[in-house]
Length: 152
Image 1 (cartoon, rainbow, N blue to C red):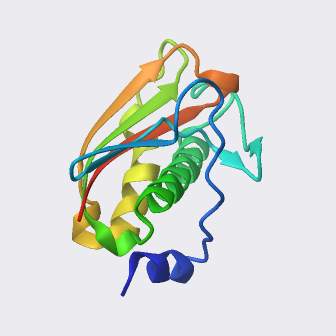
Image 2 (cartoon, rainbow, N blue to C red; image 1 turned 180 degrees about the vertical axis):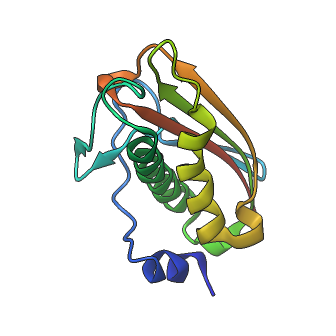
């Protein structure tokens, strides 16, 4: 089953690529690696939720926002390579979580992105990951996700 079919089976639709918020491009390819720029939880051109984890959002809400970010990263990846079946492996994912000073559940929030990537790409979606707590993200986004994919 293709990654696109898995996305449809999950009841999801790949969104349009989120337009850059500043002076950068959505993806950069070098050799067999595609790097996505950080993706915030934009849905139809608007930030889905704002705020900090541990203050405005709980872990489950943060996980859902990370899932939206990952879907946006997949859309950017598809725009770069044309066919998601060309993804050999998701190599690395970095998840930034806007967090209250005492919030320590960034890995659980990041699971929203990691789980979606595994659902879409199967074994090829399993990756190395960093989950980082930060004071603030662009537009007051609660989560931002970037990834590196090996492609054919």
